[in-house]
Image 1 (cartoon, rainbow, N blue to C red):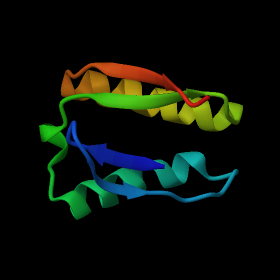
Image 2 (spheres, helix red, strand yellow):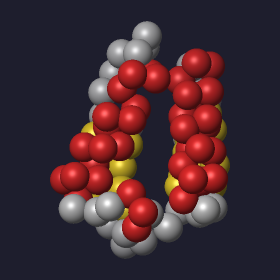
Image 3 (cartoon, one colour):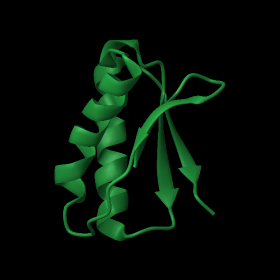
Amino acid sequence: TAALHDGERVLASDSRVDARRHGELLLPAVDRVLAVAGVKLRDVTAVVVGTGPGPYTGLRVGLATADTFGLALDVPVHGLCTL
């Protein structure tokens, strides 16, 4: 799942379920969310990522992607437990 939030509401979200394709599905989902919301990636001010519980590979893909976005955009990355 990828979503964009403006601090008050969800602007757009996208969710796909396929336990074997986490890495293939995440970045296209981010692209779709940004396009639907009409927001450029450079305008993102923070990244929030689920820290579990969840499937190990899915968590690694999400955490690595969030960290990369945080570094590339120079924005904070926040972990969120989904319990």
